[in-house]
Image 1 (cartoon, one colour):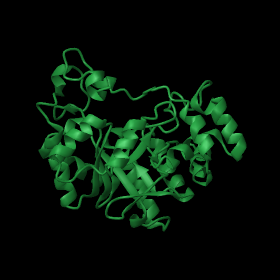
Image 2 (image 1 turned 120 degrees about the horizontal axis):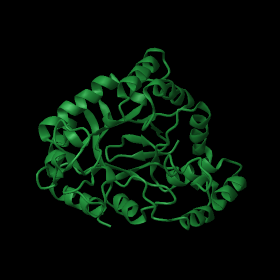
Image 3 (image 1 turned 120 degrees about the vertical axis):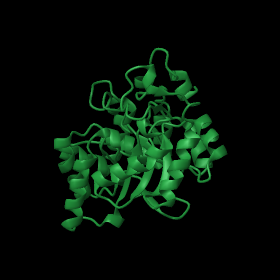
Image 4 (image 1 turned 90 degrees about the horizontal axis):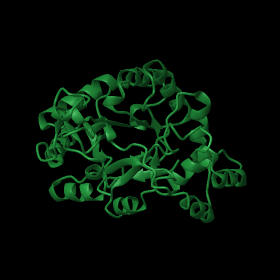
Length: 312
C-alpha cells in the first residue's frame, strides 16, 4: 500500500477508512471488517458521535490478534465548540477515552470556525466566536501542547485553504503536518494541493468519491463516461479508478462505507495503476463542485460567510 511520509519518517497509509455518518449500530462491524480487509488508517472525529463504538471495535481487534495498536494510524478531530485553549486537552482526552487509546496518531482542527464552549451546534449568531474573538493561532498553540505531551503524535488541520494555512504558518512553532480537505475529480483544488505539497503538508481527501449525494446516484461521478471507460480499460470498478486517482496524486483517501462489499471494493483500489493519459482525462472533469460548504455556520448576523470561510 502507498504511504505518505511525515518529516520524522512516520507513515500515513494512503488508503484510509472513513467513519463519517456511520451509525452507532453499524460502525462496530464496519471497522472490524475494514481491519480484516487490510485498512490500517482509520479516520474518526468527536462530532461523528460514534467514537465509543469504534473504540470497542479497536479493543476487540487488539485483544483478538487482528492487528496491533502500533500497526494502526488513527485520526480524530477537535470540534468547533472546543477551540478555547483550555478545552483542547479536555477534548482530545474525551476522544482517547472513547476510542480506548493512549494516544492518537493525528489530531486535527476540524474547521477554521469557532463556537462558544458548550454550544456543539450553533443555532444563531450568539453561539459563534469570530476569528478575532478566538484566533486559530490561539487554538493551535494548545494543539502544539497536546502533541508535546504525547497525547497525539502529529497535529494538523482540516478545511483550511491557502490564506488560512499561510496565516497559521506565521505564528506556529510546529507547522500543521496534515490538511484534510474535500478532494475528488469534481473538486480537484489543484492550487491548494500544490501549495501543501510544496510546504510539506500532507493531504487527506475526504469525500474522495464525490460525497454521499454523488456516489451511487445516476449522473454521479462513478457514472461519468470517462471514469467508466478507464475502469473498463483496467478491468476494475469505477469507484476504484477514482480512489486510485486520488492516491496517485500523492494524497491519502478515506472512503467510508458500512457495507461489506463496498469496504472490500474500495480497498481494492490499492491495486489499480492508472496511466498518465487517464489522469489527463480525469482532470477534465473539474467542476469546482464543493459539497461540504460550511453553510451550517453561516447564520444571520454571524461572523462567517461562505466567502470568508473559503476566500475564493
